[in-house]
Length: 220
Image 1 (cartoon, rainbow, N blue to C red):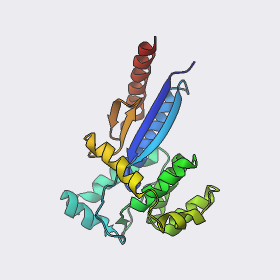
Image 2 (image 1 turned 180 degrees about the vertical axis):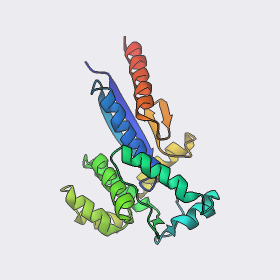
Image 3 (image 1 turned 45 degrees about the vertical axis):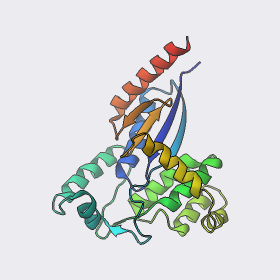
Image 4 (image 1 turned 90 degrees about the vertical axis):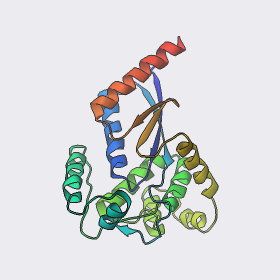
């Protein structure tokens, strides 16, 4: 019997390190040669809870929130872009790119979890934001992804026109912030082993191997 890994991913779909981190995880599991049974589940984290629907320009946002100088930001972003390329993904930071509030997106991802399609929906939102510059909380973007995944696109409007999943998403967010999580991505393995940041795939594979060994020993 293969060891089992339950991996909870606390993430936001406008976080480039979350996109990179999930691809590092994917690569790490490949390095383990499918020697484990894996259950993945994504959980909401909002980097910008108070951001208005129209979002904010990336340069202004980084200066305001993190104090990152506009002149230094392009070099830092280029390193991230190159790292993403090695993982087979594209991250674009063209002129005028904006960052958005993601609460609507997290509500729809909660629904997608119930449909068994949360992982695919999350990856599609990463791609929509980082490759096309789309607003991940735009109902049209969300409906297009739902349709591409053969889900009921009309359900997006029904959810967003109601209060469905508002309390559920807020409750999940509170669980993880109460655990002290202040940055993403955070991977929680088997409910008790946190791995923070977009770790290198080889490093992550070693961590997961250790968890498997501990879990196997505990089950004996």
